[in-house]
Length: 189
Image: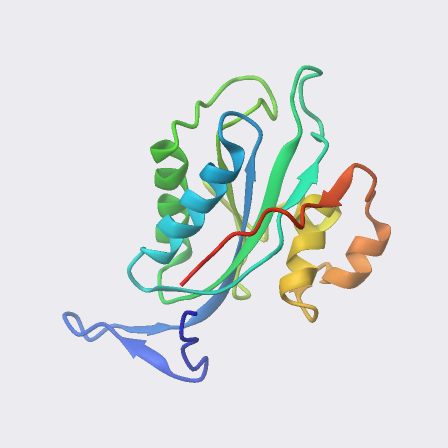
């Protein structure tokens, strides 16, 4: 089990002396092509291997119907990873994209096309961003049960900034087509 850093301590970069606060971040994982479970586990491992990132929780795995995807899209496996990090949100986004690339994620013009791995940055502390390359909190997370349900499992008091408690948002979301897979467990150290 990963040691959780004290959220009241500010980390100092020993080379530059720059103060970097530790923030809680939430990443949502999804896969509906290839070895779905292996892709999710690989993503958890890659996140845990990232310098200045501490995995503090991993949700149960859910199997979900595709949302707003092409008709031939297969079911997803989804999970949520909680981390504490001193990385800037932009560096964390770069890392998420690099992890997707490592699992041969192909980007397409087709909206929500099937993918080997999707690593979405949902929240980073209370940071807000509306840049093309970084939108925080994630603009659709508050309405997607495949993000909210696993997030609530691993953090019952979670909130989406400017949207409210995850528990309340989940009650309003369409939860059909989402089922926990008790036979699949993501491991982290």
